[in-house]
Amino acid sequence: MGFIFGWLSTEHYVRDIFLMTSVAAIVATLMSIRFYLRITAGRCFTETKMEGKTVIITGANSGIGKETAKDLAGRGARIIMACRNLETANAVKDEIVKETKNNKILVKKLDLGSQKSVREFAADIVKNEPKIDVLIHNAGMALAFRGQTSEDGVELTMATNHYGPFLLTHLLIDVLKKSAPARIVIVASELYRLSSVNLAKLNPIGTFPAAYLYYVSKFANIYFARELAKRLEGTKVTVNFLHPGMIDSGIWRNVPFPLNLPMMAITKGFFKTTKAGAQTTIYLATSDEVANVSGKYFMDCKEATLNAAALDEEKGLKIWEESVKIVKLTPQDPKI
Image 1 (cartoon, rainbow, N blue to C red):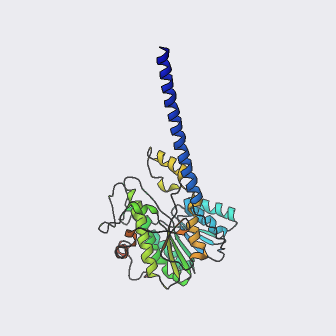
Image 2: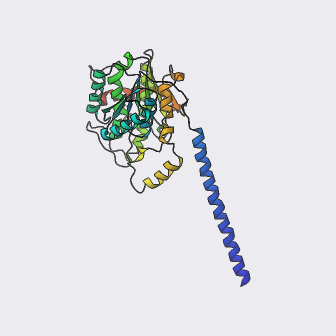
Image 3: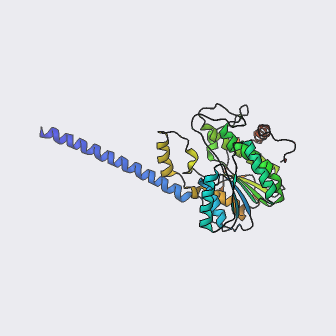
């Protein structure tokens, strides 16, 4: 009997050692991955001042938009925070003014999911702003399973992430050209690689799960940015686009419980902070290194490569032409 109990305890001991070793190895691996992600995250080291510059940032009331606004305000820029939630935006404005001692911060209403709101915002800017030095398309949204439709009959994720910025750029382009040299910065995402833009369904109402359309909208951003850069050649208005990294922000707040629990664990453990995520946007908005660069994709403050599908200029042109119809551009609207 003593032999049997001794054999069992040894077996249990070996199993426990194996489990502890395995857990330790997993933890060490995860910590190594986290450390690697932190040290390889790009950082904008430029100290360019922005006094006398006017910068429009969509979605500047939270996430990387807020961090971008804070950084550029600290450089002396005049910031126009274009936001849907004015209450939150005004609270963030007060925070930025207090922290940077820069009171040249304005909050204006903009709901990119509403073409009426986009037109009202643009009309206000054209009327009251003599110049725009930098336009940053930062705002974005992601739904979880069931999609929504905008008041214009457009799938809401696509309306907010692609069609709204497309329309806004058109309506402000004359001011940007007049302000040249000027910059347009578009926040895209590496998640575009997980999707494809279906030319037969550019208003993809009913897509399930709706979260997939976030990836599609980011792919559309890339096609838009590349075609826009081509059309603006020679105007001294540059267009560049970026992947901010996987960010611990509110973009995934629509993921329902309990699916949000593993997402929260992943984002808190491995995603970039919003400050780190804003670095490439800040770089493209301020750095002299990219003053004459246009139509390029950046990641961690360095130029990055796109896949072959993203380089399809014919498809990009078709998406542009259909986007013109979906946002209902008129002959009286500015042309690009």
